[in-house]
Amino acid sequence: MAFDATVPTTTNQISADITAMRANFEFLIGTANYKLFTNAAGTAPEWAAGFKVLSFTRDMAAASATITYNGFGFKPGAMLVIAAIDTVDLFSIWFTDGTLGAGINQYLTAGAPAMVPSNSIYIQPSAGNTQAGTLDALVADGINIIWVKTGSPTGTLTLKMAASR
Image (cartoon, rainbow, N blue to C red; front, side):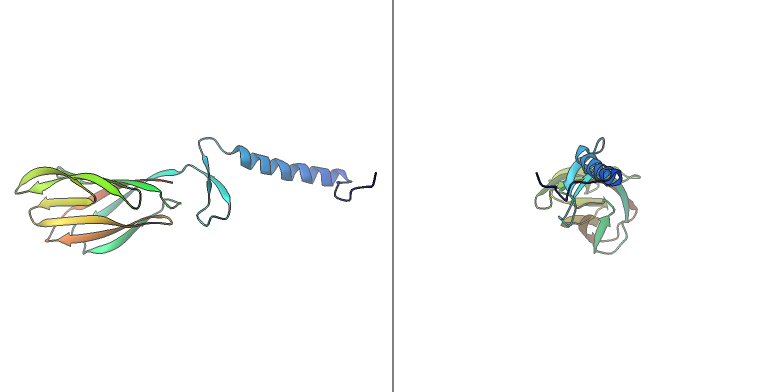
């Protein structure tokens, strides 16, 4: 039988090979409470939680604009957004998979609360004064929301966003 040149011949080579194989198997085993995903570039596997919740705010007096909310660490496959102003009984709950969305809003109409189905965030602290947010896109690290201001709304809108891979 001929000698195979790829067979390690020293203890150091054998030890290095075992260490390298061990690292590969540890990657396959994973980490507690994490799942195996492909990285955003699609070039390598990675272990990650696949779910993250972040909090943001929006000044209700801010002009209409497209805003990127990021920091999730991955491109979301789905998002849940809960928006509210804590000093008034208004809220919006909205979810999207990046293509379809649905939600429900409670806002003031003619001075009384109204609850309606919606596919966007809609906050109206007083008649004729609103901030409405619709999905622009799910992006590499979060979500782009197109905000449209009507009238002169005031207050600070708190947004709790849950992103899932």
